[in-house]
Image 1: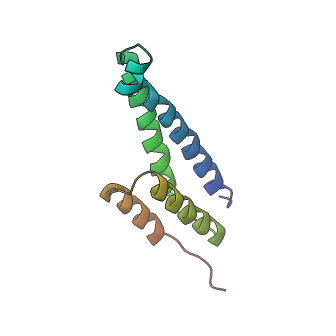
Image 2 (image 1 turned 180 degrees about the horizontal axis):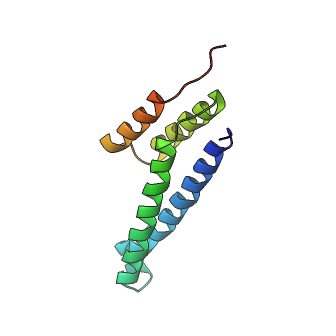
Length: 109
């Protein structure tokens, strides 16, 4: 697998995270009231789907075992940015990350 794999995983997660943010507007009760509507079952279903897709994409990124130093650097940098601006990793996510890091086999210089 090429070092480009990490960029595909980051992009997939970024798209899923953006969809989740968009779906969050639909289930925001305060925003719904301001718009003169109520949160519908369809709004909730859209949120649930977007949340599951975001989690799946982030899990794929966390689980990926980098094959090159650049992949490892990009992976860790993206995770740092994501956790700084959104949420911290839970125990399950930490376990996925640590397991992937344990699988890293970088060549000696």
